Image (tube, rainbow over all chains, first blue to last red; front, side):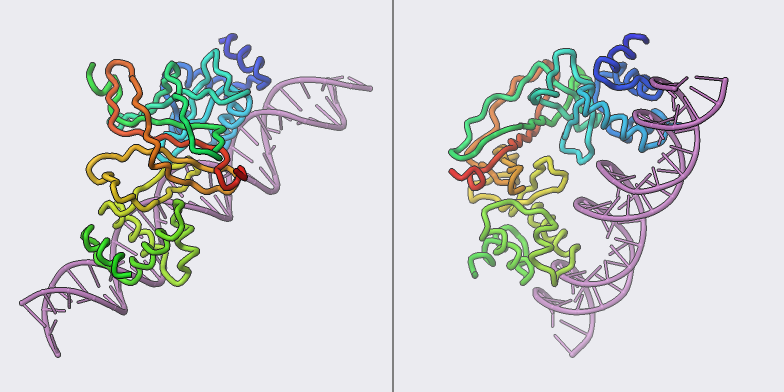
Length: 138
Length: 138
DNA sequence: AGAACCAATGCAACGGAAGTGCATTTATTG
DNA sequence: CAATAAATGCACTTCCGTTGCATTGGTTCT
């Protein structure tokens, strides 16, 4: 419990009750979350608060944003070694078309791509879609 | 002109005036288009018509949809050899953060990725972001 | 402790984009 | 020309992200 407080403080985020709860919630499950997911988990709290909490978390390197192609932004806790504050941590994401969950495959980095002359890449997003391990039954 | 009609007919899409115009418009510029772009180019036409035209085009393998991470869906004409009807043509896309345009890099296919056990990939989306050749001045 | 201050939260509302139902027009076929 | 089907236009809804402003709650300073 105190650990979460410290984690937040280390990232210069004041550990309010709400923030601790949200952090805890995200830490328990290993998947990514849409704002709506968090909303459904914390019906007492206001959408705006949750929205701004995620935003604050993101700005301070606690979570990173994921565009998995579903049209709704997902968020995931950054791993310990995640350096998405300084530069993009270009791991890839997997979206399961069965359970609709998106996971970070932090071990799998996006391979380097040779672009045509004149193109300068600064960021990359790779999302694989299919069936996740839970749903494939393996 | 007649060529476009034939192209549409070959794809089982009835070549109405509107559709020919939209096809022509997309064929002239080599970039990708959001619904809003088309809307601005055809102020006389209704949004729904344009929306459904693009949808029809997509269902019949005339255009393919692109999720470039901007939050708005883009469309691009399929190339001659594009087989996105049968299976995904997994070329990558480049989004320029300067001019805000997204282009298809049809020559650049998404490299194969080894996934952890249990994950079955059926589709992939790779978007690189940065500065395009036009904007980098090269 | 009380006052002053700032950050966090809640409420209301806006705006963009995707999508749908239904009426109307246009084209196609018999 | 009539009957039918497809295409277009209009109105409206929903979803998500976002912002402005009032209110609450916690910190700090005297």
